[in-house]
Amino acid sequence: MGNRRNATEGRKTRPVVLGGVIAVVVGGAGFGAYALLGGGAAAEDGTRTSSAAQAEDARTGPLSAAEVTGTAERFLTAWQAGKVKEAAAATDDPEAATALLTAYAEDARIKDVTLTAGTRTGGKVPFAVKGTVSSEDVGKPLAYDSALTVVRRAGDGEPRVAWQPAVVHPELKDGDKLVTGEAGTPPVKALDRDGNELTTAAYPSLGSVLDGLREKYGEKAGGEAGVELRIVRGKESKKAELSDKTLLELSEGTPGTVKTTLSPSLQAAAEAQVAKKERASVVVLRPSTGEILAVANSSHGFNTAFSGSLAPGSTMKVITASMLIEKGLASMDEQHPCPKYFTYGGWKFQNDDKFEIEDGTFKASFARSCNTAFISQAPELADDDLTKQAQQVFGLSMNNWQVGVPTFDGSVPVQSKAPMGASLIGQGGVRMNPLNMASVSATVQSGVFHQPYLVSPEVDGRKLATASRTMSAGTLAQLRELMSYTASYGTAAEAMVGVSGQKGAKTGSAEVDGQEKPNGWFTAYRGDLAAAGVVQKAGHGGSTAGPIVAALLKSAG
Image 1 (tube, helix red, strand yellow):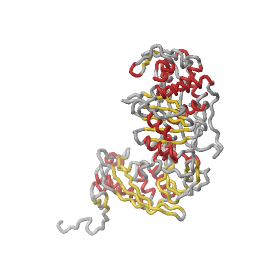
Image 2 (cartoon, rainbow, N blue to C red; image 1 turned 60 degrees about the horizontal axis):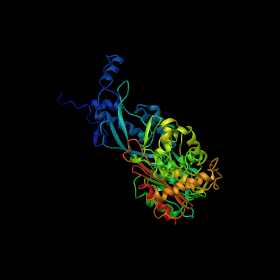
Image 3 (spheres, one colour; image 1 turned 90 degrees about the horizontal axis):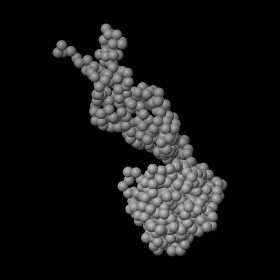
Image 4 (cartoon, helix red, strand yellow; image 1 turned 60 degrees about the vertical axis):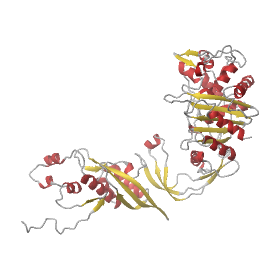
């Protein structure tokens, strides 16, 4: 026995380095060899029935290190070699894996793939991907990191790679695919109103705006698309509002040119103002035309100024006041109730700090932002009165603005009882953003609704939204006086100090459930300028958003 040669002596083996562990595939190597070769004692014992062998070989419990590393290597080695069916067979969903791995080579045009495994952690194995993306005569290197997880296959317990699209690329979701070819839309060069190029380097807030301009005008502005590797989103990703994403640009496209209405000086000033606060957003308009002169957000990922959907608080009282005056339920110089409390629809409403104004006028209530002065009129209103006023006079809540980039156009839903009462003061179901509220002030200043726009409708012949009617001359005169008085003597006075000329303003504070401080709102106009802003989780609008808006009105001269 002592002279008997080992059964493996002289046999050549190839070690594979996997996360610092050397796994040697040899005959009779025990448990690890079983995981790699699919054999074992059961395969050698012909005395047992196949069903008994299957039952005995069904594995449960934690995966061994050899099972994880062996399965991972089998999958990665086959994928790297372009053996799609073999790689897919190492997963728990061969059909889905085959489809995506085939598309990886054919649709994404990724070749010369090298896959390098990292250090295993439990059943998870990270790996690095390197390859070359080619399209016609253009080729660029591609490199990224991904990971796979080994699990036991249902039924027989065999170790398999748990298939999910993220194995191929970490940003892939179900239904997504990788495609290399002409970019979805040509690039665009956006210009300000003076003809200068707008860039995120100069104006950090404009990232989402520039993306929106490319999406809208890329094919209309005369540019040519480049070639890129991108993720084309499937249905599930689109439901989650994920957009197609460029992963690698192989060749640059030729940009088309789109001119915007943005003022370079006001845009720079707006960027500087919002940078002083966390979660601040502001918009500046020209009331006589609807041109958007500036848009800025201190947070650059989401364009709250255009697409936000927030309760506007007491800035909504501008719209409510116009409705009450039209209906003869309020007049600026007549006495109007402002009690500490008013109960409607089972809800008890109150004023800030529970103040009251005895024998005061509607002007006094508006200037001090008395909640009960507005909610006390709820019993005299139909459920849809506020909705109609917002739509018919102020052009809001109809989802039909054609700004040039995506926007949320405000929402004033028809409500009843207590929620209807709350909507009169900008709470309940009412939702707005700074673009909407700047438009409200612009409508008061000009006397007619002009839909805001960032790109002239002459560029693409689109039709701007209109309002079906205007306020009467008497109502408009009173509303302007209410906002003017508030800017000089009311809750907006401190912020509006130094803003000269024809001016008007309204403050707002919107309570949000679970939020310690309210969102502060401010909307105002001066001459042929209107602006509105919000600072979230900051407090009263007069001291938070007010200084931002007022500074921009001043900076325009």
